[in-house]
Image 1 (cartoon, rainbow, N blue to C red):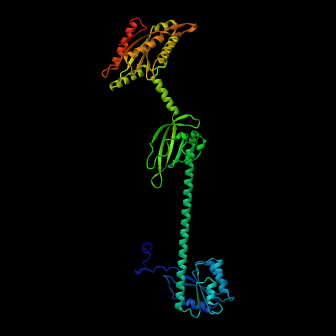
Image 2 (cartoon, rainbow, N blue to C red):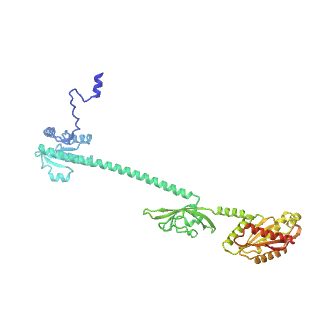
Length: 470
């Protein structure tokens, strides 16, 4: 048991301490085709002493072309053939050359033609007509010449097989690389189709515009916005001016709000976001953009703003916004602009209208009063409902005397009105007025309102339907 273990650990130790020689590689197979047995014997004897590239020589014998064909079919690895010309037929050797080159398609095997009858197969004609690699007379083929011919033939065969192996490897790599490129190309095309379909399905207008201004990509939403004429390519649509590709080397603003005209001639408000794309030279190749239709959002924002500053019954500014405008007018006065006047108006005996005829009649009186006020105001003037039946009128850049004249025309106009009531009745209106003027940079909104209110209270105390200055 111990000896087995030792043998396993030291398989190369035979007790002498000498390592056995390394196994030699397989010998070179050389096919000798000749119908003369003496030729086979002599060649075999000579090959025993030959060695090339660390490998011995192995002789394979064929006494006819038919035997050689069988051996070549079984041994495609044979590198060299020593071939006689005249065997079972005068040209059996030459026919075997045709078989090797044309039928077997073996272009690598080295064929050394040797003959004892040179006149039967002249060297020049044979070399020209047949694909052989060497031509030797049997009488001239000494040991040294045989060795030289075989080594030269083996080197040629080795070089050819090496080149063929490299070619196959290169072809395999080319085929593999070609397949990889085709796979990547197919993947890139698939990704391109995916992106194109994704862009086409996006609900917002998307486009790609070259630096020269030509549109190369326009999705369905873009075409719907600007009409079918912009299906794929073209210049800026007329309503899209100002959003063209920026100048070379410049980056477009990240987001722009603008108004464009759609295919139906309607103005649309859009938020446009663009990004410049760099070309291979680092310059701007074009711009990719996306637009969001914010028309409805802006309309809602404006409506919300209007509701936030408007009195719902009268349609005038509400108290908060009117006072904001008075505050802004005071800042203008501080900046050196001409002063303004504030008119406070209160409908006389308004409670009696509500009590006698109902709130609907009171509401109608409010609306009728506002309509009369607007008829006497300029474009820059403002009116707001301060509360109940009380209104404030802001007259920018107006003297106290001019404000008094405006208030007088308004008082006369209201006094001449008759508010229609149910069942064919009507109700007359009058109003009392208090007017004040801003008094310079040290004035305040509270002071202005207080003076106007005090003037209004005096007008009502003195019999109503009159104007008082404060």
